[in-house]
Image 1 (tube, rainbow, N blue to C red):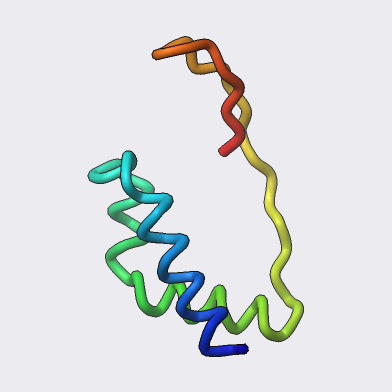
Image 2 (cartoon, helix red, strand yellow):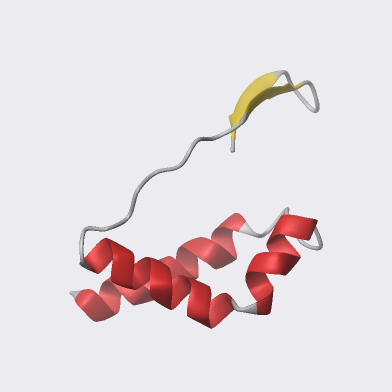
Length: 69
């Protein structure tokens, strides 16, 4: 089960970065990708992960939609 969680975290990262290549936040995270994902894994496993504030905006292209990031 725990190996599956780590695999899922890596897969979720690769899925999420598809259209975010070369943004400042993405590049900063990827500099220490393995360490960042392992720390996230440990926080989730030990029930220490806390959701932080997100930003909200409306993207009009290609269709108008709400974005929470």
